[in-house]
Image (cartoon, rainbow, N blue to C red; front, side, top):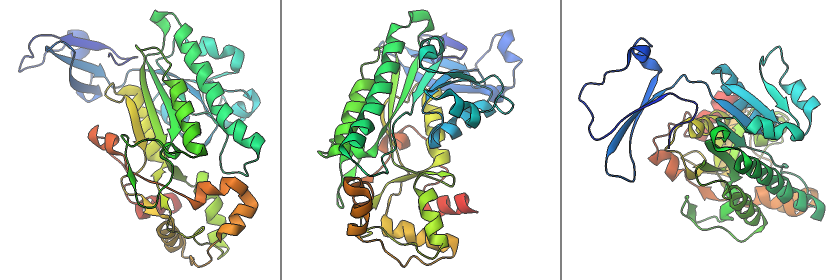
Length: 357
């Protein structure tokens, strides 16, 4: 499949030992090229040369969230065009002011169709946060917020004329797909679990899988994202600073994490690299047990990790939602490593130091 938004040259049958570019391209800085050698169904080899600096047009749902904000910043820094697909335009305009994000397009739902048509790719990150008390109504919204937006995005991609249809959909899902275990190791080939979050993830993914067959689909099962301005750490750091930090529950549960920069880089790579397709675990190579995370966090903050939060206290506050932190899974990024993705932060100690330095 061609990489969208890039100029491509294809040579068939044979590859010359010396590569000669047309005059219009040979004058460019050679560092601006990215080269992939790939095979097609037919046995001939094709050499495709892509302009790495080529401009993409990317539509993003969930752009105002923790991951989405950093992804938009990365796309903007690389001079790509961004369409923020939102239901709350005023919030998006506050997060992405025109003076800091010139040229960004903020589109409410009636404008999503025009934004998606003509985009190079779509990133789907929308969904209600799960770290809250789960009432029956909240559980319904956790699932429906993901299914509703994913379904709308898929339908808009399917309805687009061929010539202006996005070529790639990168759709978020979560490691909750695998269920929970203190002993098993899960990779992309592992079966789904049988709890509520596994059910949510299965339906979330099956909705994305309805996209056109000619659209490259990447499903990223995201772990716990670590960064200073959101996610789990934003809730843990104040407690440690007050000398009230410690593991939640037994501390033996697995914590499959990823640094914010790495998940953004993984999504970015999935947009631009045609090898990235199917399911990819968005987790660091070295998951840890929660007690180790808390010990490392306490060490970096120069605070003790001495005050564990018992199960019953979390259940009193979060109800069934306490299962998100009391139970975990050991997930490894087998596919990302096969694809040659380079993690900036493979160890939680290094990630925490970078975040809190």
